[in-house]
Amino acid sequence: MALWSGVGQAASMAQLAGVDAYGLINMIVEAVQTVKRNRETCQLLARRVKMIGDLLQQLESTQLMQHHETRNPVVQLEETLRHTYMLITSCQDSSYLNSCFMGGKHADQLREVQNDITFYLQLFPLVSFVDTSRTWEQLLSRSRPFATQETMDALHGVHPTEHEDRLRREALHATESEDPETHLPSKFEKDQHTSQVKNMEELANIFGVEKEAGLSKFSFPQIMAATDNLSWRNMVGHGGFGYTYKGKLPNGLDIAVKRHEISSLQGPAEFRAEIELIQNLRHKNIIKLLGYCVQQEEMILVYEYMTNKSLACIIADESKRKFLNWSKRLQMIKGIADGLLYLHVHSKMCIVHKDLKASNILLDHEMNTKITDFGLARKLAPNVTAEVLVCGTYGYADPEYVATGMISEKTDVYSFGIVLLEIIAGKLSRFYMHNASLGSLPEYARRHRKKLHRLMDPLLGAKRNDRDQIMQCVKIALMCVRHPVKDRPTMSEVVVMLCRI
Image (tube, rainbow, N blue to C red; front, side, top):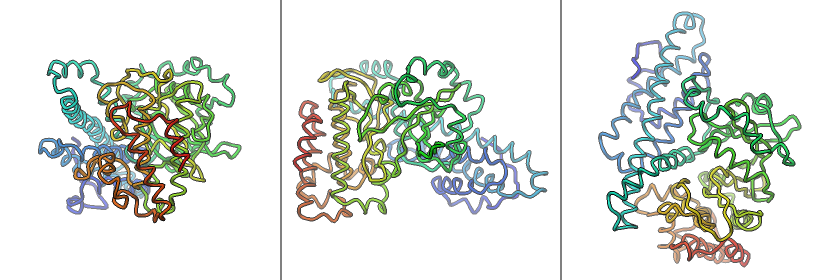
């Protein structure tokens, strides 16, 4: 770990001793906005620290975090975060004397702390992976009580990476962030991913997307100009693929720019899937892909910009959610259902999204819903199942798909049921996962299906007629999350039921 030598700091170690990791992370993100020296390095540090905070939120819900040997790294992390905060605050001093006498020492110390932060970014997903693997074994033991240990070992031997991939994706999707400046990858990181991206210039020719009507190929300078050099001020969110920025084209059109993060576990395969699947989709409830950028190691997707961000942001923000009456929420539910029906039936090919969730549903200026993020989507023949690698987001993924790896149109139906319940309850699925006494969201909804006041968002202020409609939607949602899969309705049947409300 980095050695600490005293420099003139805005805060002392004693003052920071009582601040926990989350508090320190918030202090670092706030402090970096006013740094005057080593700005890019400080912003990179703050962004990585925020990523650690997202991972910690996931770890807090695991049983492993109750063990001393697992929590010990968190204590060590807090020490590193204190050093990081003090260094960043020292960079707020722009005086000539400080720059002359302390500039070199600051740069060295920032590099050492950056190495420490990188270490924790690698450590915590591994801790979560161990816990997820144990939980996976427990789930399989329950669903397949006669499975032998040899069978379990074989499972992990065949699919050792998709568990970690799913875990990392969940951690990075967990929150919408306003992190500091864009990531400037180190030489080590670039070397680490060279084999993955060395032929990116040829990807566009593989797609043949230049020939597709309405899909533009942007140069990287055009992307930089549109987003003010990928400024952190324009950052509007992040996910498993990378960070998303708001931009503006010369013609005044607002755009959303999704840039591949060099440390992401996703890459060319998800980038290609997104373009191949979405470029021909034309529906009011499906996000519109405007273009892409492929240049050296850069992989960037350009979409229409959604003013109100994601459904997850709205549900999580009480000040915004209170303006969503039942009429507007029902409109959103029907919009999502129409979008899924289009993917499953009317898009000339059956597309299973595989990762439908509140953060992958965007909202325009009129709160109309748009399904986005097709990196994990899969084309299927109608009424056919297929065995695929297990990936997605815990809490939204169909448990039978997680247990067997088999997907069908009804994999999305389960996820839709979860989102429908979230809209009614005014709480995201993870709220119930983090409160063991409540059980999962479907379990809670089943227990209280006849006690609507226990399930319904109190901000709805629903009238009697509204309550009847809400009760019908709860019934539809519970049908969507039924086990086994064959007992769930299709999206065609769901849309018909919703049209009667």
